[in-house]
Image (cartoon, rainbow, N blue to C red):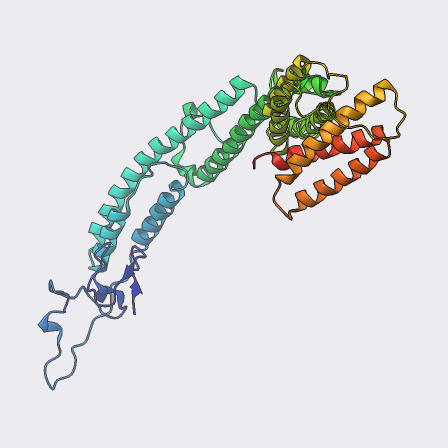
Length: 408
């Protein structure tokens, strides 16, 4: 069964004679072995350790007591080294010296062990002083950077690097440094986050304003957020409030802008629905409409706003809907005004065009079934000379087909 080395806490394989990490002989791990036994290179004890054949085993003297001074000093150095681990990028390491001192003391050489520990203590204090100095300087630099950008930070309990370090208070100082490092990390992340939120708000707000989307009090609230950030300095508590307000503004924009874009796309769909299938340029405009609708559905608001802006120009550039007689048959027995006759011709042409598009949908799909039902409803309304209702039914059908035909 594998054991753990009492010096370096590493696992020792069952057949090993020494710790593979620090070299401590396995024989020293038994409390009643007495002085350092001789161990050959192969890991077996010397033959002199074997009791004479037939005779009693030789008495083993008790192990030398641990030096209180060496034990206390070694433990203090180990604690200091562990405290530096989480805060220093390249913390000082005296593990090797601690292992050597443990081996010397286990062999009864207390004076030699003390000398090793004193040397390790001197090196650890020098490196600790330099390490803590670098840590304090780095914290001060990060704090100054945040203050220059407009965020006030007070690192309570952390001295400035220029004040020096009292190595007798390292055990109390290092936890404060670790806490300040984590706190500055959170503030830096929040400060970067508020800048990102404002960039998203400005982009969406500017795009929405170009097509006249109503934004309510959003401009005033954005100005108030910028005023708070541009003052003499924002405290940590004020930063939390500013981040919360910016998040609310962005969320409201994400609710208001899609609703306004959807309403405009619906109006454009009705306009396109009144065009006959062979109207010049209508197919290109319909594709642009479907593309903008797909972008809106996927949450790509900036692209959808650009698409709607383009769609407006395309609709304005279309030729007027031709009146006249066309080649569509009239219902017999109807008494229609000239305007109603023109509308009937347009609706019949649109009905045939939409029926052709319905036949291209996947057979027995839900979209095909619903579209066929809408075609039948519009046809019945046309036969009943209810032209306004038939126009609305065909417009709804065209809108649903636009979404169904848009590539995923």
